[in-house]
Every structure is written in C-alpha cells, then in structure tokens.
Image 1 (cartoon, rainbow, N blue to C red):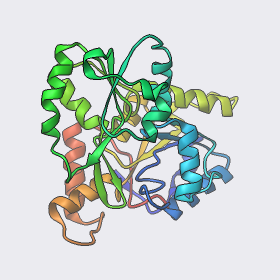
Image 2 (cartoon, rainbow, N blue to C red):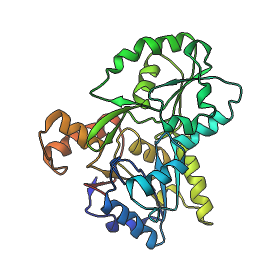
Image 3 (spheres, rainbow, N blue to C red):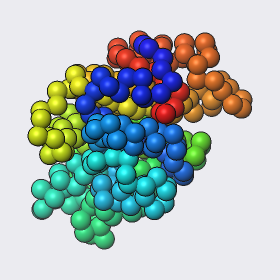
Length: 294
C-alpha cells in the first residue's frame, strides 16, 4: 500500500476514475475543496470521471444537492450513478408490488419510490424498501430485530438502496440501510443490494463510461477512489481496478469515536495499524493511501 500526497502522482497511469462522493467529495455539509479541484484537474488531463455513490436518491437529485446545497459545482465530473438509480429501475419493474418502507420517510424515498403516498403496512407488503435510518447515538439497531424477524416469516425481500452501514454527516455518524440489511441476512432474509460493492452499480458505471469514450477502457486503466473498506475497496477488487483509499473518511470518524479525543493524524502508527488490521480482516487489497483527495 503506497502512501501518496496527491492524485497527480499516479493519475497518468489511468484513463478513468470512479469516485465515491460522500466522504471523498464532501462530508454532507460542505465540499472538500481539494478533492473537487483534484477531480477537475484529472478531467483537464483528459481523464473521464464518473461519480459512483450509495446515495439512495436518483442521480438528478444528487447532482442538484452537490451543486446547490453542498456548493461543489458540477464541472469536476462527467456523469454520476447512484444506488438510488439502480433501486428505482428495480421498483419501476415491480408495477404490481406493494411497498413497506423501513426507516426515515424522506425525500430520498419519495424520489425512488413511485406512489410514495401509497406505501402500505407490513401485512399488505410484497417487499420492504430501506433508505436511511437515524443517528447512531439515537437508536439501538437491535430494536429492529423483532420487525426483521416478522419480515423474514412473511418471506419479504429487503431492497437495500444504500448498502453503507453508516455515513458521516459533518462528524456525526448516521445508520444507513446497510446496517439493517446485514442483520436481515444474518437471519437468512433475502436482501437485494443496489449499490457498492455489488456488481450492478459498477456495470451501470461502466456503461456510462463507455458512452463518454468510444474506446473500451479496461478495469486495469480505471482508478477507484473511496473511503470505505466495506464498500469501495471490495467493489474495486471485484472489478479488477486499482484502489485509492481516502483515509480521513468514515473509518477515521469511527477511530476517533473509539480511541481518540480531539484531532487525529491518519498517518499515525496507531491509525495505520487500525486500517491495516481491517484490510487484512476483510481480505481486500488497497494500492494507494491518501489522507484526503488532493
């Protein structure tokens, strides 16, 4: 795992980038300016940049969020694919199926789920949609277990439109649908994942990449950028692409909560050991390591 200071050190080895958004481009509140500039500089060199995110909302909504709420602009990428896009495609094909929604009823759910006002209770549902939950310090996910067991008894598939376990919003951790999806799998429930690290979203990203470039870009010429050892890294490994791990992301927040009071150094021996142990535990490979994309 090679430590680098900026993307420019390695970008000439690649023709395209698939970059995570939350934790790499922004923290849910404001943009990481050096990250935006780095991706823009890559595009200026002729590299194609596709944003690939586990956001449970459609790409059109994420584009507006990036530009108008986060303030990151729209000139640092060529296209975007979201877990919500994949979920919406699946739901659009389930014309006669009724949905029970699990989690917060927010704009993400309304955008993905047609006829949001027609959501039904669990007894009438054909499937369960989960998008987003709550702050990790406000709920105990074990409280969902009785509900999950009822879903399993009814044989309901769980459509997980955000496979992330948690997300960092300005330094505060929130549970995502992936946490409950993992619990549902542990009791042998059927889960349909629409985002990273699963194959469908990467295949959709490759289609978007092909539409931008007449040349067939091989995975070996694609660099994947992300901050999650659970989603971004295994996704890169499965695709056969190299991985640039952004250290000052979700795992840094977890490390801070568990071990550190105040600011931390992502190049410290303690944090490096923390990350290396998790890489080994997950049996994944990381080619490059950077504090924050720059």
